[in-house]
Length: 271
Ligand SMILES: C[S@@+](CC[C@H](N)C(=O)[O-])C[C@H]1O[C@@H](n2cnc3c(N)ncnc32)[C@H](O)[C@@H]1O
Figure (tube, rainbow, N blue to C red):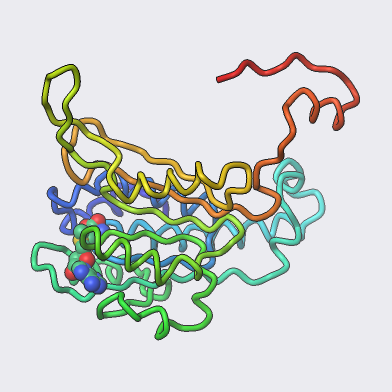
C-alpha cells in the first residue's frame, strides 16, 4: 500500500504539531523506498515510524514484483533492462529497529506501536524499549550494518553520544544518517544590526567542517534541508557514507570525459 488516504487517516493520531515531522516523515518514506535499505534504525518513535515501516513493506512488494519480471522472459523488457539482477539473488527481508525509552510524555511514541499494528506492519518493526545509550550492543546482530538511520531524540549531548556509538555501525557503502533539528535560530550581529537567523547549528557545522577538512579524501558527504518557515524542528541534515566508488576523483570533467569517450567536450563552468 503506498501512502494513500487510508494510511494518512491511520497515522493522524500520531501527529503532534510541535514535533515538526509532517514533511520529514514522507521524506523518510521516499528515501527508504529509493535506497532500499535492509536495516533501518530510528531513535525517537512517533509520526515518522509508520512511514519508515510502510516504506519497507512497499519495498518488499516491489522486490517481489521485480523478481517475477526478471524470471519471466518477455515480461516488461524495459524494467528488466533497468534492474541489477545480482540485487535479486539475495532475499530481501528488511527491518526497522525503533528505539525509544518513552520518557517524553509529549511524544506519540507509545501510540506508534498500535498504529503499526493497525496497518499490519508489525512484522517489519522491532521496537526496542529503552535508552539508546549502549543499546547498539543489544540489537540483533542481523541489524548490522545499518543502511538508514533516523535520529530524532534529545539535544546536543544525545547527538554527540549517538554519533560516537553508532557511526561505525552504519554501512560504509551508501549508509545514510539523518539528524533532525540541526539548524537553529541563532543570534547574529551584522553591520551593527542584531537579530536572529536560522543558522547551521553546532552539529551540522562540525559535520561540514570535517568534510571540508578531509577535502578530496572525504569518506562522507553532508546535505542539510531547511524549512525556512519554522524556527525550530525545521531542518534535517543527511550524512551519506561514501564507499570507494562514490568518493571524489581528483580529475576534472574535461579530462575524465576525454578518457571515457575519447572526445573533447566543453568544460564545466566553475561554480
Ligand atoms: C522528538 S520525539 C520523536 C518524534 C517522532 N520522531 C515523531 O516524528 O513524532 C523524541 C523521542 O525520543 C525519546 N527519547 C528521549 N530520550 C531518549 C533516550 N535517551 N533514548 C531513547 N529514546 C529517548 C522520547 O521518549 C521521544 O519519544
